[in-house]
Image (cartoon, rainbow, N blue to C red; front, side, top):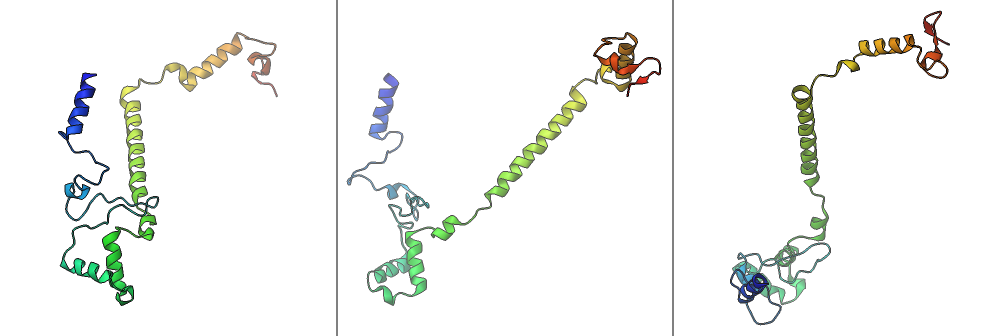
Length: 171
């Protein structure tokens, strides 16, 4: 309880960091960010960010912003694109283009598959014991012969399919 009250007091006073305020007074969020970029957030689901992409403009960009206030028919296509780039970071086509991130993901997946295969191989070679003698083919043949010699389950079992006179399986 005391720690919760202490943390709320620290956060309220801004001791460890400043929290964003939703009021007209107070510091602007762009004052705390690196110069040309601000709290810019634009995605396909949120295409119109609260702040422009570039906030600090050089002389050429300021002149272009002044020219923007006039008639847009006087602006060239390059100037319109430059104004768009001041306001937005990417176009919708650039936001929607495919990335090559899938190659990195698949590379990591195959790397871990390979590492796992090497680990399993190493365990089989160096950690696991040899197969028991009861799993060898010779042992299985001897066990089958013992079962047939004892005539185990002669009515419906294994011995019922063996012909003891011809010493072969019944057809």
